[in-house]
Every structure is written in structure tokens, then in C-alpha cells.
Length: 446
Ligand SMILES: Cc1cc2nc3c(=O)[nH]c(=O)nc-3n(C[C@H](O)[C@H](O)[C@H](O)COP(=O)(O)OP(=O)(O)OC[C@H]3O[C@@H](n4cnc5c(N)ncnc54)[C@H](O)[C@@H]3O)c2cc1C
Ligand SMILES: NC(=O)c1ccc[n+]([C@@H]2O[C@H](COP(=O)([O-])OP(=O)(O)OC[C@H]3O[C@@H](n4cnc5c(N)ncnc54)[C@H](OP(=O)(O)O)[C@@H]3O)[C@@H](O)[C@H]2O)c1
View (cartoon, rainbow, N blue to C red):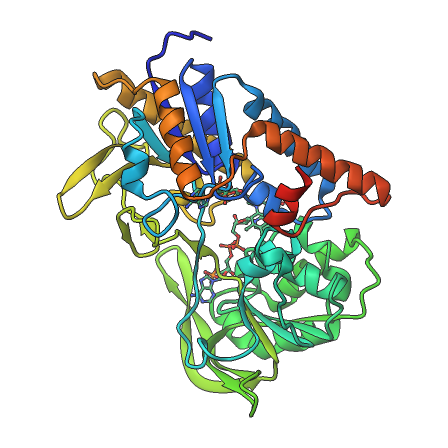
């Protein structure tokens, strides 16, 4: 590692993308300022990956500890950046780093804008529940009024994680998965489905596939083969002894949320679809026939979008990146943020990971994207004459700003102490892991 680099690069967000980007930049000899909204690093690896996957999470934490331990990586937890947050974008840029890489994940929520959505009691976004059961403050200590018949819109792995919690922890009576397309278009993986497939109501599944069989045949799909395929995870089912029941409602597009006299969800009106080919993809097309699914809770698990409050140029759920092909490799994606009003690239401002493409793949993919983003930053530094201010000056200005805003310093030393405190508590209570519910408890412990 050369220590001659005159550059400090601010990486905002310490999820997998930001951490692996930080490592690549630090290995190249640059100084990295790592700012993270949560006190703890890890992002969705800490607060998204299901809490029973303890071994996998611990494996990732080990790697993250090594990254934070690098002498030229400087971590500040509990620091949220954005125009409505304690560090405004201009304040960040004024620190005088050579470049800023945003790896802040996809913190915005995607809903469908259904009538009844805003006010009905019992409507949630999957991410809020995920943050709750994985113990991210403030969601960890919030109450989510989940009923007994829970509809989940969406059929990906996030749906599986939420259904896992509902069936194996909350023991709700029924989880109804509501999918706009059919069984062949399921986005979840069999490996994840093994966690909950024991609760699958096989008779109900058979009846549901029979109901939609004419539409499946119309597009050349074999209903019997699909039924068998959906049962495959059962061969390696992880038994949980849950009393809950899991059912699927396919080819259903949500139209309206119905409520009872207390404003609580009482049903979801859906329109039945058929499938039509649009290029390579089979799309849902309404048949005009509707029905009401009797549910008392509705969860949206249809993917996320980026946070539009940050102040980066934003359109259609995404931050805007340079619209022209990459100058050296037309196949390569663009990572430079683009200002559409000025019609120019925001010099030295980049996005990576789920902040670049929301809800896209596993930790390995976020890591690769963070590393590519780091390469793009370094290519920019080579082409630019500008140097950062000295790290000491940047640090002094940042810490003064945090102090003025009553933001406590939470550096890598505090992360290590917090982890040790949580491990000690887990050992005391003979549990696999322990996590504090609030930032206040974490800070008090230290
Ligand atoms: C429910 C769920 C379960 C998953 N389970 C698995 C799994 O089992 N295995 C697997 O491989 N992958 C899993 N994934 C996918 C994996 O978690 C993601 O691919 C990966 O975490 C994305 O990394 P990222 O760094 O881009 O974003 P994130 O992990 O979201 O990290 C973003 C970071 O930015 C910080 N941040 C956000 N906003 C700001 C701000 N304004 N200022 C400062 N900091 C900010 C956050 O605190 C966070 O630390 C799961 C995803 C979800 C949603
Ligand atoms: N355990 C794990 O490994 C794990 C756990 C959680 C998440 N992840 C990963 O994280 C990423 C995100 O997962 P995800 O489940 O959020 O997304 P996803 O895999 O893209 O699934 C989203 C689901 O929502 C549906 N959907 C999207 N827009 C919709 C709309 N407007 N109306 C109705 N339905 C809509 C999709 O249906 P269509 O197909 O019809 O669009 C799909 O069924 C994925 O890469 C996933 O693998 C992994």
C-alpha cells in the first residue's frame, strides 16, 4: 500500500457496497472517510439478512471488521447525509474530499398507490418489518400491528423472509401471497422457500393452480409440472412446527384496500389477470373479473427505490447517472451522478450498489458493484488535477460539524466496543446473539 495518495474519498453508506468500495480505495493508498446512517456498519447484511442466518452474518461481520481496521479507513456511524438530514450535501462537498461515492442502498419504499393505502390500519412496507425483526433502530422498538390473515404483495425472497417471520415467529393464522403473474414467474428461490414451505397448504395450491390452468396453458405452461415444481423445496424443508398456513393467489393485480368501521384492513379487491407475451417477458393483463381476498393486514414486498430526500438528482425511483455510453467500455454501466437541469455530470460524485440499481441481487453483487464504483472513482482521480484538503483538516471540520449538531462520535473503536458488549450479553443470556433495540441503549452501554 502506498501512503503517498493526496486524496481523501468520502464513501457514504457502510453496507456491503460501501465497505468493499472503501477497502478497494484504501488498498490503493487513498484515505477513506466512511459515513453511515446506522451506528453499526453492515447495512442490509446486518439488518436485512434474516436473523437466524447467524453464521452467514458473522462471516460477513468478520470481513467488515477487517475493512474498518484498515488504518486509512475512518468510520463515523450515526451520520445521515442528505438535504433533509444532519449533513447536507453541500456541507459534505465543502469538507473538500476529492470525490464522494454514495452507497446508501435503496431506502425509499415502493407502494402501489391503491385507494385506501395511505390511511388503512394494517398496511406495511416489507422493509419496515424486515428492519423491525432484524432490530434496526428505530424500527426495532416500534410496534407493528400485524393481524391474523396477512396478504403479501410480491413473490420474491423478501416475501419469503417476511412470511418466515409471520409464520415462525408471529404464528399468524394465514399468509396469502398475492402475485400479479403465475407460478412460473415466482422470483423467490427454492433454497429460501425451504424455510417456510412446511406451512404451504398443498390442497389450496392445487386448487389455485387448477383455477388458473386455462391461462397457463394459453402461454404454453404445464400446470401439473408447475404444481410439482412448487413442491420441490419440501424435499429439504426445514421443519419449524409452525401452526400457520401459507397460500398463493396468482394472476391477481391489487385494485383497492377495503377497511372495516375501525379503519383496519378488511380485504383486498383484486382483478384476475391472464398472461400475455411482451417480447421475452410474460406480462399480466387484466380480465375485468374481480374478487375480494379476506385479509386484515397487507404488506408490500415489491422491491424498493432509492431515498428521494437525499438531494441527489432523482427520477423514477433512481438517482440519475450519466446518460451516455461509458467512454472506454460501452458495455460498462455509468456510476457518475448526472444533473439533468444543467445537462452535465456532477464532478466527482458517484453511486454504487443498491443506490445505483435498487433491490438488485445478493451481497456478492453489491460487493462487485461497490468495487467497480471504486474503480470508476479512481479513474476519475487519475484524470483530475484536484487534491483533497489534508485528512486532519477534513476530520477537524467534520467533527466540529457533528458536535454542533449534537451527533455523538461513533467511530470504529466504538463499533468494536459495542460488538463486545452485545456478545457479552448474548453469552450471559445463553443466546446465539443479542442486539440492543435503540441507539440510546447502544450509546449508554459505551
Ligand atoms: C430482506 C432482505 C434480505 C436479504 N437477505 C440476503 C441474504 O440472505 N443473502 C444475501 O447475499 N443477500 C441478501 N439480501 C441482499 C443484500 O442485503 C444486498 O444485496 C446488499 O445489502 C446491498 O448492499 P448496499 O451496500 O448497496 O446497500 P445496504 O445494504 O442497504 O447498505 C446501505 C448503507 O447505507 C447507509 N445509509 C442509508 N442512507 C444513508 C444516508 N442518507 N446517509 C448515510 N448513510 C446512509 C445505511 O445505514 C446502510 O448501512 C437481502 C436483502 C433484503 C432486503
Ligand atoms: N435470502 C436471500 O437470499 C434474500 C432475501 C431477501 C432478498 N434477497 C434479494 O434481494 C433482492 C430484492 O428482493 P425482492 O424480493 O425485494 O425483489 P424481487 O426478487 O425483484 O421480487 C419482487 C416481487 O414483487 C413483484 N412486483 C414488483 N413490482 C410489482 C407491482 N408493481 N405490482 C405487483 N407486484 C410487483 C415482482 O413480480 P413481477 O415478477 O411480476 O415483477 C416480484 O414477485 C433480490 O435480488 C433477492 O434475491 C435475497
